Amino acid sequence: MSTDSTADATVGSPSSARVLVDSRNRLGECALWCERDKVLYWTDIDNARLFRWRLYDGSVTDWPMPEPLASFALCDTPGWLLLGLASGTALFDLSTGRVGPLIPVEAEEPRTRINDGRCDPQGRFVFGMFNPHGAAVGGYYRVNGLSREALRIEQLPLPPAVIGNSLCFSPDGGTLYYTDSPQRLIWALDYHADGRLGERRVHIRIEGYDVEPDGAAIDTEGGLWSALWGAGAVARFDTQGRETHRLALPASQPTCPVFGGPDLDRLWVTTARKDREHEPLAGAVFELDPQGFRGLPPHRFALR
Image 1 (cartoon, rainbow, N blue to C red):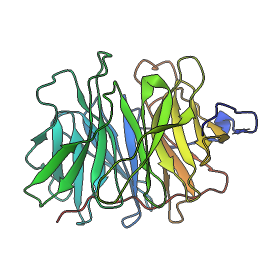
Image 2: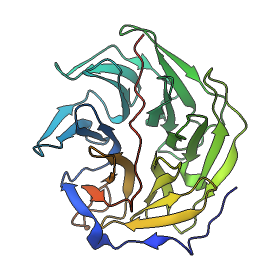
Image 3: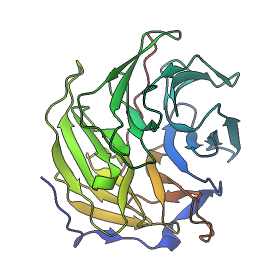
Image 4: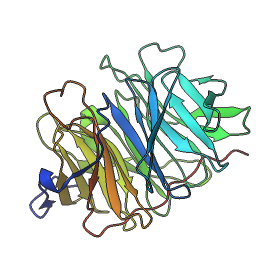
């Protein structure tokens, strides 16, 4: 079921959003909270940098990447990340800053790069591709961690996309949500532990001129929180696809929400400064009050 109704949504004001880090990212993305270390990670794709903010002292560390970093995952092995770099996936050692061997993705298609991704409950990284030239040629993929030296990538049987985005899983892991952003539809499909996919169905329709769904997060009640690129807001949709809340931001290009904090009761949102330099706070990471909703710890990439 889907709906475009916002009549009952709670609309916040930009003044309720607090700047967590004034990072001025050109294309901030992939906010990911590590509940073990109490740190927030995110990336600035266009500037090829990975960032980390520590809860207890507010310090920020960043690492240069060998190419644009669009998404990543925490690993079940402490001190490691799985990187979704522009041309492929690789492991990253946080203690040394070393990027491991690159496993290419769509090497035969020079127009695309890796885009949004999240781990499933089984510890596999699921991601989509992005084509800045506008043709729907990018696939969706899943990475299995055979070992630190071997990653296996499989293409998923989903239609090609322009901007594969909004990948996230229901609390029980049985539903995968995703979008091709320009279509303004967020789909849902049954997701099985053995890797099989069900038939996709429209879950949410995004309305509004020049508004597209970007990154997404799931709360404990199964609500989907979508960063609405172009609308300067994050909207929550219930399990029936109905919009229930909308929280405004003082930046028109939000990119990715994530629940964080010791109780997973804060909502942090990355934004983009690209083409919005006239907005003073564009590119910052913001903190919002998610109106009593809480999130879930992230699934981690399994290194076997």
